Amino acid sequence: MKVLTKLVFLTLVLTGCGNPNLTPDPELIKIQTPKPVILDVDMAHEDMFATLFLLLHPNVDLKAITVSGTGEAHCGPGVANALALVALSGHAEIPVACGRETPLAGDHEFPTEWRKAADDAYGVPLPKEGADSNLQASDLIIDILQNSSEPITIVALGPLTNIAEALQKAPAIMANIKKIYIMGGAVNVTGNVGNSGVGIQNKYAEWNIYIDPRAANIVFTSGIPIILVPLDATQDVPVTRNFYKALGKNRNTVSAKLVYDMLTANLGFVDSGGFQFWDSLTAAIFTDQSIATFEDMELTVVEQEGPQSGRTVQVSDGAAISIATHADRKIFEQTLLTIWNWKKDQHAN
Image 1 (cartoon, rainbow, N blue to C red):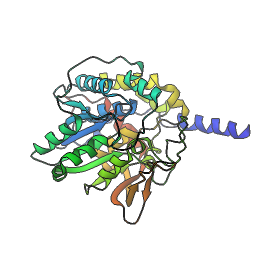
Image 2: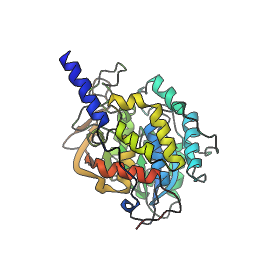
Image 3: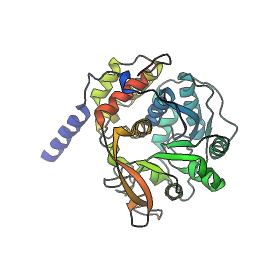
Image 4: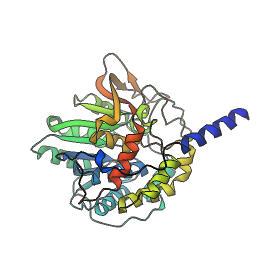
């Protein structure tokens, strides 16, 4: 009983920490030439937050959104929700496509209840806007890269199925990929698959990598420069009640209000202490690497089925990858508030 009491107390402390008086600070954002990027995403709640962040950021030129059909949202609803975010942010010209709905190997999938919640946008109303691309996700990635006059960065926030498939179909596109920022893995911390309460005995893997380990290995070993944002770093940026309160006081755009409404719909998850800014941190690091600290490591992904499937492991002959190990929570949270409240006619130094 004493142990349980301590755990409850710790959860309350963790979910309540942070500064409820945070405010947006446009001076944090140094305006630069927008960087071209393809966003590959699986359209769960936190993916939506990160998508809005990149859609609104003045230093980002978002070329396309590809939805991972192996992710939390199914293709139809995932694309519809992505199109809604594109419309709400004033970027209706950005193409949206979905990819295959099964992993390149194996049969891992997100829990049914999670997928239904993501499909329904957690009960938060979204507009029905636009139409998806006539290309599949991997083909849209290939088309944009082949026709770009400059290298493009990919920000990947879900299972890596679409990117791996694109690399398999057209290996030459690697020359036009500047970097890939990936939210995934757990290097020196416990994974989040086994403690998700869904009966999977795996304490090592993180969900995005677990869903399609084969795809992850294809991307890791491609030779493309990779910045990996694993649970090691995201545990520094939990979603807390105090951040929720700060956002409640600073929701001056449609996008900020939408994030607030979606957090309101998921307050139970916030209060559980298990909700982290996984994808938003990855998106923010893409725009400003000073938010995190990094360490170079050599990694591989366990593909074999079993209690370590999807594990990201350090090995002497693994793929050379830059790993985000820690994040500056204060600057990160203030950056989120600033960008979600960003307006097109706003300028910063």
